[in-house]
Length: 320
Image (tube, rainbow, N blue to C red; front, side):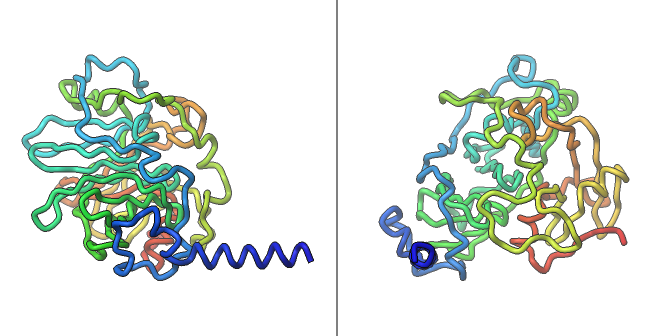
């Protein structure tokens, strides 16, 4: 009887969570009548409440030579826009803040990192003539961060850069051609570049709160379908549009030229999601993606389960 009651209560809880009504009191200014979410059971609380993970806006920067905290193999997200000084956004800070609202060369940008998906993407924050400012909702969908904008309180799926709930549902952000590389690589290429300064928060910057995560057999708070072809859910893939190249294949080749893109791999970048100290993580290497003319292309290096969740009909570039 006790087991039956537990099952009943579990079903009731699932039914409640699978409805937007569950979130209305926390989000009174969000229009839940407009949404592309078909299965509300995919939307879960990640633990922290709205803004419990504080996004950053208008960060301060240091010159490369003035930075003393970051170790050489630590990953940074690099933003290089023509006519502006290159900027590095260290994962040691994004691990704890997940979104940085900034302006680079007159372009309002959002630099984002979802630890549970290893997804590091940068977006243009302009939508129909309006500049949006993004925060962390505290919600996850398929283990991926759900962002929100302060202006309309719409919810946005970080992995795809699209509004999924609220007034702006269906609107897509422009993804910028940024990439993740080691701090040493950024410094070598940009000796006069800028790096985001340590934020004024009491956080264990440089620590990985998800120790051992990218060695697990199952992602956190994910109940979706696992990747096909026997691909482990927590291996990294390089996503370009709706195509995904397993990182292991690129690492073995060091360069691939397929489907009109050029992918290169270089050793020297630590995994941010391995050991408790980011700088000591296993070497996952750095990836650049360009077109045939050498122009950088938007891409993501994410876990296989997240790619399959958001691109279920995507093309797996297995080289077979």
